[in-house]
Structures are given as structure tokens and as C-alpha cells.
Length: 234
Image (cartoon, rainbow, N blue to C red; front, side, top):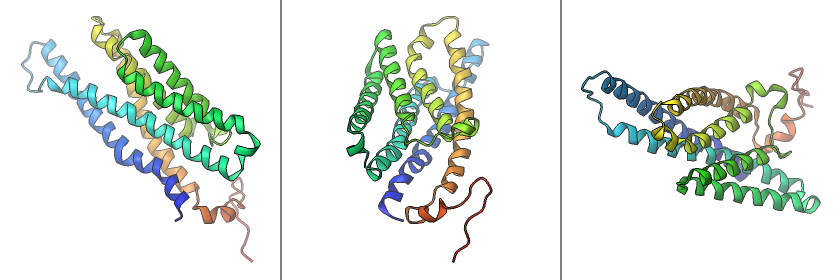
């Protein structure tokens, strides 16, 4: 395995090491928080400590940051590796600088989103972050599997990342809404996000099977993927 193969594995490795454990913790805290809220509303004395609510918010923020970070990392490798191998810096220098600027803008906007307290600024930074992800995702170096978008690792991941950004934006709304409408929206969207994460695990494992090591690629890509045949060795 060469160095560039190691860089290619950073995205799935970090997802397995950091993101998926956080998903389990967040789901656990979410269930405990809801159970405690229902018990208190029903007049029961809950044995679940009140701290589970704040833990759910804190770890949920870590999860959102991790998902967006892994998404950026997952797009950075194919974009820049293919730009270097295809000499795009010479052929399209403006697009190279544009992509770098979008990466920096997206990272900066996402960092400011965590610090913003005013609703307007939270909306602005969230919009800039989401737009940055979408612009980067539609660069020609990204393999999106457009013809099979319903089983695409890219589309699952992009949708999940945008939902995580939205979850960060509405945190204050959830606590300020006495009718629990924002909490209901939060629950529905994040249940959908959980399904996307499950799909991410399946499509990510599938894609790892399809991506050969660097030294194997010139032979593997001679195969006919439609008819599932490869040229016979001489």
C-alpha cells in the first residue's frame, strides 16, 4: 500500500473510529432524554439524571462537526489528488484557486457557526457552509454515482451533512419553542439522518470493495463493469 492509498483510507477510517461511535452515544442520550421528559410530564420521579439532556446536545454538536469534517475530508482527497495527476493546476488555474477558496470559506463558516449566538448569523454561517459543501461536491473529480443516486454514498453523505448543519442551527429554537414544534422537526429529521448513516455504512463498505489500490488501478479499470468481465492475462 502506497502513501496515496493511505490518504484514501483516512476518510473511512475516521468515520469508523470517530463518527459511528458518536452516533451510538447520541442516539442513546436522545432516547434517555425523551424517556426522562415523558416520565416527568407524567408526574413520575425519573431515575434518569437531568444531565442526559445537556450531554445529548454537547455530543450531538461533536457529531455534527465530525460528519461535516469527514465529508470535507472525503471530498478533499479525490479533488486534489486528481487535480495533481491530471495537471489541472496548469490547465485550469482559476478553478484550482476557486476550489481552495471554497474549502477555506466552508471551514471558516462552519467554525463560526459553532460560536454564533444571534439567529441571523447562525443562519448565514449555516447557509455558507451548506453552499460550500454542495459546490465542492459537484466538482468533476467527485464520483457521485448520479445514475444510481438512490444508493450513492455521496448523496447519502451530503444529505446527512446538511441535516447535521441544520440541527446545529435550530438548537436554540428547540429550547425556546414552548409548543415543541421544533423538537418534533428535530426528531423526524434526525431519525431520517440515522437511516442515512446506516446507508452510509453499507454504501461505504461497498465502495471500498470497488476502489483498487493505486498500483492495481491500471489493470482493474480495464474490466468491463457492465458485463462483469475482465481481459484474460496473457
